[in-house]
Length: 370
Image (cartoon, helix red, strand yellow):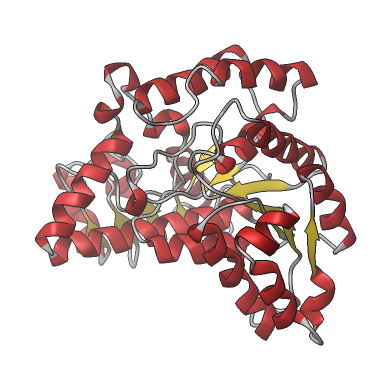
């Protein structure tokens, strides 16, 4: 996955390093957009640099600097106090950021605090809170687009109920590892179960094969996130601590399903308040195809959310779709026959496949043009 690129060729500044480089190289901030950068120690630069037409989104700064840049004609949206998240953030989340203070229990983490805030404000129907959620989600989408620029993204979809310690979980992890080793960026819904397994596999990709075997053993001590998210997440961070510098992947979870924590193996986490935005964005960004592991209602929804733009070619040429587990998708939840019927006679017909085993999915993806 490409490293996060500096924005010196456009108008967005999202880190202090980019701010300093822009001031040094350009000598002006006129027309730039500065997102969530702490400028408290850059008062001199703000006082002596042209900021006409600039926009500062959630940037802490001294009042004299704020007054000067407003006089220049800049717009200043100050940080919003007492929020457990930054609505103007310029980057996606990291596991360490969302799970900070895990030693005090999951309830103390920023992830849990954001969910609690969401529940309170959703019940209140506060229009200011709904605006903040929308601004946050748009900022995350912008950051995700920048992160994935140039990447070949394969989505891996599957149910949250797949427990650690099962062969199904191990198979999903091996799938994530093989996709990452083949040069794909693995993207999942960012939650537990099959999603975590695929992110774990991508994390394991740079390490030898024994690392994944041992990681699966460690994780098996806390098979699910119930009854204790703290124990479940702590086991994941034990793996990350023993084998640092894992491979990159993306998780795209939502606080809409706040009872499901994000998994710590996705190196980049684009977490949303709006589930519909999250679902559509995950599938739209999986431009190299999607693998659908056995799941329930959510995975069925994702199959047909993906099938619709493939059917109408609304995003261009159809992208590959690989369904795993013939019995699951033809008998238990017969999505495959309907998908076949939709595809028949259309260009998407050559881009769908049903396989029996997880191990067959990468080859099927390759065969379909992923």
